[in-house]
Length: 399
Image 1 (cartoon, rainbow, N blue to C red):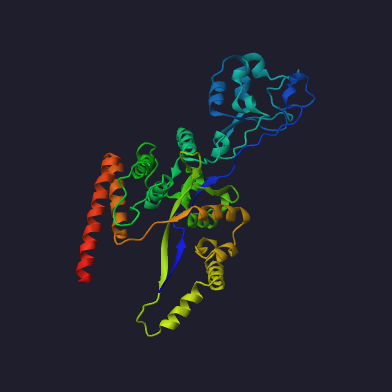
Image 2: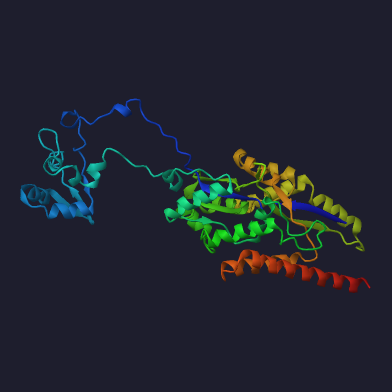
């Protein structure tokens, strides 16, 4: 007898730096504020050393006349940085009328970068805050975000995995096999569209084929990834310096003809088997019942995590156990949604051959620049030939 449990192999999420959406707060007097210049009772030009950028320093050092002589006299350089000396607690360029000598004689454009910007400050909240992007909810939004990231030399990480193709295939309403699971269905229009979309990620949108997601995500070079939830656990442990700056989100959805959003994902089946002729068949059956019991699964998951940490959080198929692991409410919400979208990929006599065909087809398109439709048609035929070969083998065994 066989006990099957469904494990969401394809449960994937966006892992995004989470400094967005941006909320702008400003005081009520902001819009009417104007600099009072020399009439200001306070000043930006006292009690601190103004650092001078390299371009301005070069300009000041070559400036002729009395102003140039005075600038060269009061500028000082230490540890490779140039700054304005402080004399009697104030900048030596600050005149008695409260105005800046540099701006008064040369204009605002002659000010160094610090003086042009101060007291305005720029706070960097990460790539998404700077670009004003939101987490993409659909694939169309995904491509729009990818374009803006690419303009800033930033990338998105999606592994070249069969799981990604199966996810897209299901979202398009397709399947690897026909309804009877006796032949390939990879020649369907849905399959061609999904396969083209998958390979386009690396040919048209030039996503990287190899990368260290943990390292590039933590540095901000790759602020989005579509990864398994085990990567989420790994990041929680391996990147403590960006804690609370990122989160998981549902994968992008395909917008179907009726306007509904499809986030279907593939899954893989595992099972416990008791051999029919086993001497200890009853004991084997009792062991299986004990192992898949919610109490056992929960205790196992908790013990594994207590020893190995959060990165080893158990990927249980037991719904009761899943709810009792140490997820936050926010994490549980996303995971529940992902599990609802999981669909089984049937296991057939040629399952082992499917991954070989899809992997080879991917490489034909991405590395050899062949046409997606032609390639998937060719490997669909190969899959059908393997079906026929397996049927013949099974007939011979039956005879």
